[in-house]
Amino acid sequence: MSANEDQEMELEALRSIYEGDESFRELSPVSFQYRIGENGDPKAFLIEISWTETYPQTPPIISMNAFFNNTISSAVKQSILAKLQEAVEVNLGTAMTYTLFEYAKDSKEQLMENHHPVHSAASISNIISVETPNTAPSSKKKDKKEQLSKAQKRKLADKTGLQADVFRRRLVLSLLPGMNTNSQKSKLTQLLTSITKENFLEVGIGLMW
Image 1: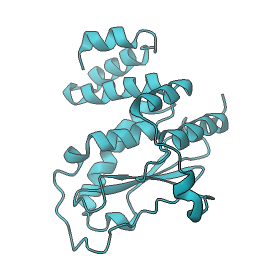
Image 2: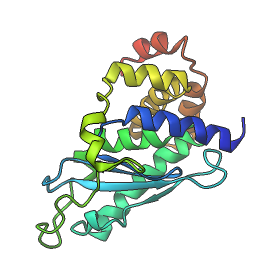
Image 3: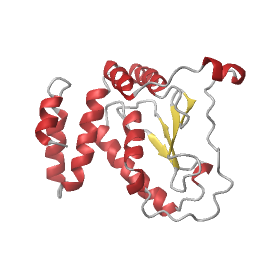
């Protein structure tokens, strides 16, 4: 399957998974933002992910340069980006935008543990737009589809081949901190790469993650 075909499938999945999610914004068919945390949360931050022409075979571009993040120090931003890059390396070659956003959501407190606002955040409320491109504002509320449940998102991700990858990558990320050497990490990654949708439950239960 070509990179373009992979991207088309992932784009369709992202649009359906995040339908109605006000934290998600599609800037273009290859660029997306997600707000981690609610507006007004002093530890909220915004991630922007852009796909290269050869993504997912090559890494996406991850940025935290949005104005929404103007109260976050450069050191904290670099720390978050470094953690996300580790996740990118584990997921390289597979659709990973959903995985990266969900990893950031699940790890928010850890990622922002050293955050101390550099200046007043009074001006950053409601920075992220919730409008969907090419959608008329006057009819948005009336025509807005019901947001998918977690179960529905899992089913949709499974159809595009994302589900097994998401679980596998999350398992990798949850176990990597306990690995002390590159050799151990490599062996762990190779083991989990062999996990399929059919044997995932058996392996997952055995590891008790």
